Amino acid sequence: MRHRAQDEMEKIEIDWLNRWNRYAPDRVVVKVAETGAEYTYRHMWEHSQKIARALSREQNIGEGDRVALVATNKVETLFLFFALQRLGAILVPVNFRLTAREVSHIVNDSGAKVLIMDEAFSGLAKELELSQEISICSYQSLITSWQDEPLPEKPLMMAGNFESPVMILYTSGTTGFPKGAIITHKMIFWNSVNTSLRLSLTDQDVSLVFLPFFHTGGWNVLTTPLIHKGGKLIFLSKFEADQVLSVCQEDKVSILFGVPTTMEMMARSSSFESVDLSSIRYAIVGGEPMPIEAIHKWQAKGIPIRQGYGLTEYGPNVFSLNEEHSESKIGSIGFANFYVETKVVDEENRSVLAGEIGELCLRGPACTPGYWNNPEATAQTIRDGWLHTGDLVRFDEEGFHYVVGRKKDMYISGGENVYPVEVEKFIRSLDGVLEAAVIGVADDQWGEVGKAFVVMQPGESHTADELRSRCLAGLAKFKVPKYFQFSSELPKGDTGKILKRALDSTPI
Image 1 (spheres, rainbow, N blue to C red):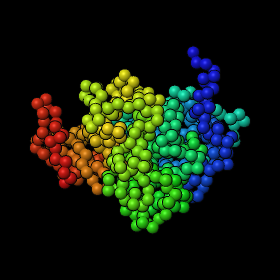
Image 2 (image 1 turned 30 degrees about the vertical axis):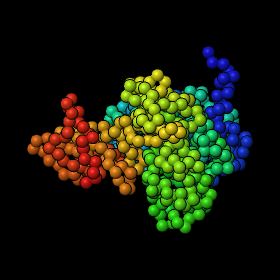
Image 3 (image 1 turned 90 degrees about the vertical axis):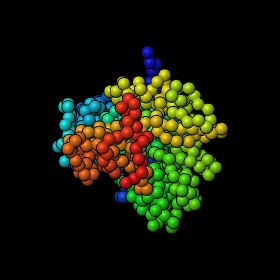
Image 4 (image 1 turned 90 degrees about the horizontal axis):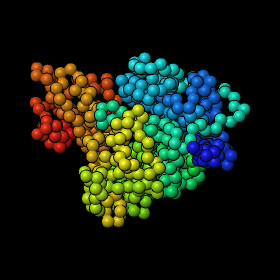
């Protein structure tokens, strides 16, 4: 039986806006770069109250209900996130780059009660095949309704508790279907604590929000930790290298976060050499290892690169390399954050020694409780309390860790995870295709892109452009292979399994 004191303590831990509305109500929490509009902690608190009341009355949203969202980045999504927490509801952000088939799967799998859609995607809404009764409402209409909403006479406090889910983030699945990682209040709280301790965050820090809100990075790398800390966010609806550099100078950004692709785009900007970035203490880079040459470009600008590591299912801020080691341990992801327990194991689940390669496993309070509606995937990933990441790492004698590859054949294209099994499954469903194998190959712009090896059925033929066009109709653009190579057969082992290591990884 839960004690009342425990419940009350958890309310304090999860209701950050309530605290900052008391401590510093007039402090700016977010500024919109495109318009200059500023929102204080009081504004965010009040807006979350109004949206919660509107959703409760108009959509009958309550505790445990899932609310799916298909929209480009909008500052109002931050208010929506905290509003749903007041109702005990769960936000399901959906990648707006996905096709109708993929969006339908996520909405159906999550059992969403309401689907909020940006009017820009009205065409997509008509193509969805939903398996349950669901209310579809316009994002713009929602904004209009809460703007005229009076504040509740009695403030709405947070529903649920520390273990309650607040979000489901769908990640590409190794079985061909996306899996919904459950994100709880507890995860967000401990990720914030870990981040603040390792990155020395203060209420004076300023950072950018430009990563999409269907990514854990958009929410939990610096957005939620800085809100927890009382800091300031500069919101951009999308990433544009020149604009980001300009905003960094104008708004005195102190911590910059990006993935190697965005960092390289900024470094290639014509304004990179002249822009004043002296306010930036360091840049945090995650998503995939940053090339050493790219690290040197930023360090020559006087900005240390803190290579990091994380994943949706844990944190996601798991490892960080302190800036004083950015040169001596270049290429390393550093040490695990404060409240993260790690081990590196071989195929027999035995811990490996320094210098040996093994799978990284994680344990601690920032770990997901599992995948939504998918106990099999949960059991495969979380075993004996340890989350098996599927990432291969090694550590040196001093304990610094280095990512060396992925146990699964997932690759990362422009910061987006792509699982070849999902792409292969779709290609094989196309008329005339007998077999397909997809691997990631190096690409100057996106880091990695897909290369598909296709075997056609006897008497059938397709051009690469034809296959690419058909893939674009059923897969998100970032999942569609850049290269298609036709073969008479694919290399196979004794069991008939395709040997991907024998495929040519040279771009065509």
